[in-house]
Image (cartoon, rainbow, N blue to C red; front, top):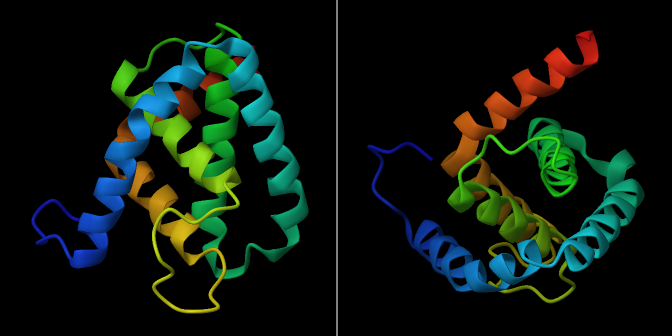
Length: 143
């Protein structure tokens, strides 16, 4: 989503969903055990969907990076991320694991289209923070 591009109705709906989920995400972050359970649930769901990533491979790679970032954050290994960005990470993960769609499917029968839309929205908003984490992660592997 380009900053110069006017928001579509879909973008407005996604933005509203994300905003409504912020307080829930903050509650998760403040409870490490609850956050660990959320992450375990996300990893389990992701494992079941790994084979079916298809044309969404780049988005999938960022989603799994969000999982690793959250794990490093809750383990206090990585803290170089603004509070607002870690909240958005948790919003994306909550939405990914949720069995109830918070927004109507844009294409009936498309399954994960709304999940992908929310995750893509969050990634767009915090891409520089994710990229900083990925650089840090890469440096850790070199040590």
